[in-house]
Length: 483
Ligand SMILES: Cc1cc2nc3c(=O)[nH]c(=O)nc-3n(C[C@H](O)[C@H](O)[C@H](O)COP(=O)(O)OP(=O)(O)OC[C@H]3O[C@@H](n4cnc5c(N)ncnc54)[C@H](O)[C@@H]3O)c2cc1C
Image (cartoon, rainbow, N blue to C red):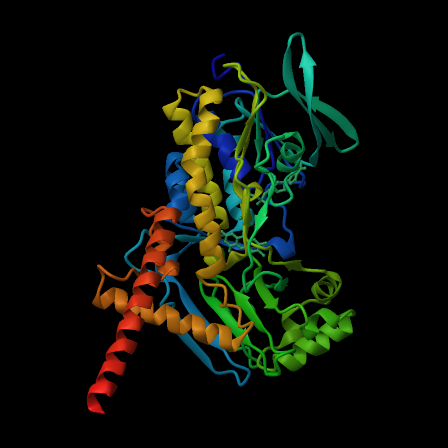
């Protein structure tokens, strides 16, 4: 079967799904359908309005898709990344973030909906003959059915009030953390290894809760109306209340467009007072007391306060992954297949900014496996798994350890993490052949795989123990010789 005769169904029109569709179309595949639950590609969901940082790893794919120059045009360059901290007394301090490695490829800050919207626009403008994207379409069920003598895939989809059946040759699961494709495979898989079961690992940021406040563009930053928010600047606005259960910080990431609304992330421990506020009045009073440096009632509209009060926000997930990345219906050369990408196979809190980049790298590796197997799915899918799986557990380990204390959830946790970070950073400068930089810095090097980064971090930990032991033994020997 040649690539134009196959039909491909992609479940999920997020970053992984739309990028996978574009990648297949660029390879000459036709009859590609993407099903997306949401009503539009750039649909605005306040509590899902994250800003992605598309780094060198994600750009390996966006380069192939010829999207990087377009991303650069509509995003903020990481090398121009400045953060202004605003204290409750109105004092402001702007600094360049030290954890951004200046030697790495420029990365780009872009809101999720702008990024997803950009890929969709590219599909609409240049690939309509190959790709159809259907919104408001929910994959409800996936079955294996018999047709003549062979088995085929049947996907049941609800689109508005209609039920449609698809019979894809290749089914691509890009449907995120609660993937129906993966959970279906879990019920089909009769191996003892639970290939499609998510394995979870603890992290200090798991379970933190978040809500997002939508603010107007260039909102005032003081009560005199003298200073206004600059779109390309990141802000951390600190509350007056310092009590652990009530203190908050508004975190704003940079935006290119001066006309776009700003989003302020509020990330707290689950027992924070903000989760007890039920009415608009309670929210409004809380924000006014917390942020006397801002004209809160001028900045935040009543309707936004009301939305915020009723929103349940979200929770950071547990770092998790599954070890099965594909499924073939049978052993025949033209067997229909299923492949999983993105959050459907690995998911974690946003600490290391690798959610979208790892999803794009999955698509990049699938593209490589297709090239190496001449688009022969029964060979491509096992190759994709063998190329990608060695990286996935290290990715989860990195998500657990690289920067989980950044949300001020524990001053002791952050203090110990910072000491560890600076010791590794200093030692990597003095003895670069013995110690690697902290993992968070190495992640920014897209030429290193997650497996290599994790290995280097482990070697540094081992060398740190040996180094520490040598210092202790040296001090003991000195003490004995002085007796
Ligand atoms: C609070 C928070 C902040 C984050 N911040 C960052 C960050 O700063 N940087 C970063 O890189 N990553 C971040 N992430 C992670 C990032 O959003 C994901 O890793 C990334 O979106 C993965 O892309 P995906 O396409 O695999 O999955 P998703 O983005 O989850 O897309 C899956 C799509 O599938 C659709 N879908 C699901 N089920 C069905 C169905 N049955 N039928 C049809 N469609 C379906 C969904 O509507 C969705 O559009 C954050 C995540 C969270 C929760």
